[in-house]
Image 1 (spheres, rainbow, N blue to C red):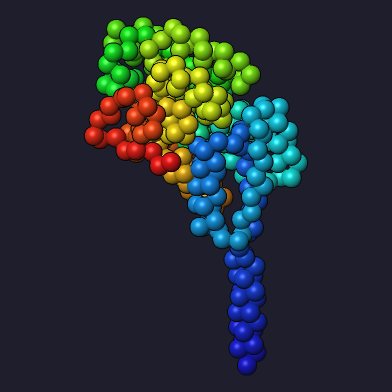
Image 2 (cartoon, rainbow, N blue to C red):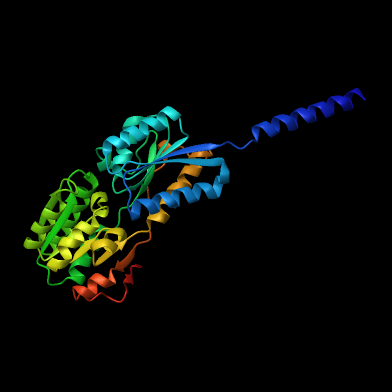
Length: 316
């Protein structure tokens, strides 16, 4: 009888401790988004969807928008560190840079970042950041984007490359596209604007000098497509864009990714980190494998530009 009672007590203790160890953890995720525009908004939405799908109401998000100010990014990250959040999602280059400077212990996953080596000034970057940082890249095939200019705008002899001077990854893309176009015999001029205040003047200069304009996945440009369109469309200068949001606002065509899917992919990485299924220091930067040719039907019609049949019209 004594043995039976002992066995019952042992079983009860096992159940009790098993229940405690099996208790689901509640996670708090800090999201620092560099600014608001369609691409970054979609990435954040996809990220949250992946985590909510896995953890349900056991995950909460502290979402903060830096409004395009790198100082705001640093302030937001510092607040996350003070709150000791479980993980930081840094959406776009300035957010990742601030997060990297703000903590070496809290896991950081970036997204909507073209090249992490450029963003974090890592020499001879091989694809894995290491430490407490990993994430996803929004890099689309730049050689194919350059070829789009040749295919869609065969009469363009001079192309302006428009980007924000404070965005290192925009310059990275511009330099590669410039090399690709010059190899095809096309003259390239670069036009760097400092912020939205001088953008209209820089666009006017580019339109006066060039037959077409290329804009990379530049966050400031994405947030200012109305300004760009108000100058370039009346001038009759077509724009090839690095992503769908910019193309929707002011471009004629793009080879783009789904930022929602990219954010969702980042969320899946976060699940692995939080569940202890992966060591973030060993996680290489992930890329999307799906790229879609899209065009802006309204602007193409207005500028009388013919688009190949394998392009999909952007939904208005």
